[in-house]
Amino acid sequence: MDYGLQLFSIRDITKDDFFGALKKVKEIGYKYIEPAGFFGHSAEEVKEKCDELGLVISGTHSGFQDLLDNFEETVAYHKAIGNHNYIVPGVKLATKADVDAFVEGANRLQPLLEKEGIRMSYHNHDSEFRPNEDGIVPYDEIVNRTDIGLEIDTFWAYAGGKDPVQMMEDLKDRLTFIHIKDGLENREGKPLGLGTAPIDAVYEKAKELGILMVVESETLTPDGITEARICYDWLKKKEA
Image: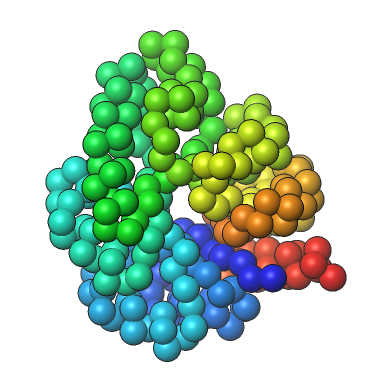
């Protein structure tokens, strides 16, 4: 099986040597990458390096504001790198007005993106599952008032008191990818196999649904590449 890596996992090196970081990711064994920024590199440079290494951009974590402020330029960049999944990694949802603004923007921009061959999705943290300042549960609003894709971060769902496996089943028609991720109930992240999140059940459900598993391991302990390798080894052991 092939797996992806959210490059925020190795932010300790991407910021200074993005292309060197991609080479290390490929050497571990990952096929897919989910960039979280391009650090000033042109779309042509990014596409050329990915093609050279045999890496595929499964999606990106990219700012919602970029679409609002520079739609055409942003879309052109993502088309040039071959990205078909524009994943919003989070937005301010503290009030009803915040939620309404995101819902309106997402519903307006999604069909425009679809015309360009790009799907918009939303990536959750744990806060979206709790009532905001106005008593609204933001994740429910996003699910019920839009039809954008959903990238379920299974650890943050777990930390937010949800059952990530049940979420995957309930929302399977909206799933873009999942983040397979481990950690503790107190929100402390861990590499796969070192926490208490239900990663075995998540893994099996993702296999059942045929959903790409994108690794994210955020704590840089002792560094991002070491964590990425621990996670990849856990996945291959599960396969075996």
